[in-house]
Amino acid sequence: MSIIETEVVVESPKTPRNFRTAIDIENFYRFVNDNDLRKEAKIMLEMIQAKVMASVKKKKKEAKAASKKNNNLH
Image (cartoon, rainbow, N blue to C red; front, side, top):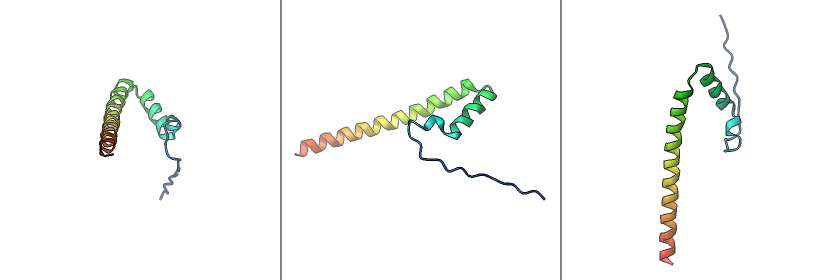
């Protein structure tokens, strides 16, 4: 009978400055490099970036419209 032990690591919230130093990101880069998946990883990260940027642009547009609407009411 074997006992499986797992270690739980509690990390601080990710900010843009420390995101790249996160353990998960380092492991991801290592996995991509070890398995020669650079092209596939690039495609995947570009897709994620496009979705995130679309969301950011939408929120900025909505905030600008709300601000404009509030300025017209006064």
